[in-house]
Image (cartoon, rainbow, N blue to C red; front, side, top):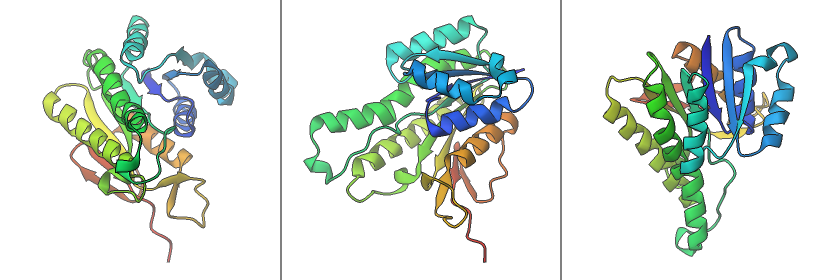
Length: 237
């Protein structure tokens, strides 16, 4: 049985990934979120016969002490083969960078960058004990260039991308494999007539494929070392 830890389980992408994983046989999911109510909501979307394979672990996995507590609890329950880090979707800034108040700078970096470091710091040692283990973080295409009036998002996303490269380089050939799925588009409804967006369900399915097979069938992917860039599908001619 493959066991997977999913942070940000209450997000649209996290919930989609959990449903997709638990549609398979022999998969157990440990889901963490700061909100017990959101965890319960996600559990209700899982098929009743698969709910015994869903383990809710409430806690702030993006905080140093919270991430350590989550990792310790998971380790005591036997550990996992894979961890998925989903953070930073609840904070937004607008306006020129130098006009942002210091508290906004700190909030965005904490939510989008420090959270990833805290989670990786707590979880990677646990995964090291599992042969063939995998650590996946979810990032955004803002890292590739400055976003108009939202440059801090680009700074944080670029920092996360470099964090992935550093972790991958420092671990060399050791377990776990460290990768980042970079969604290079807005995550929207995924309506058939809007190919510029990628839906949360599509991201969830790609994460599921990476976890279960190490590759993806998404038709527009660029790979750069530990980075797997998920681009919108080309519009049909």
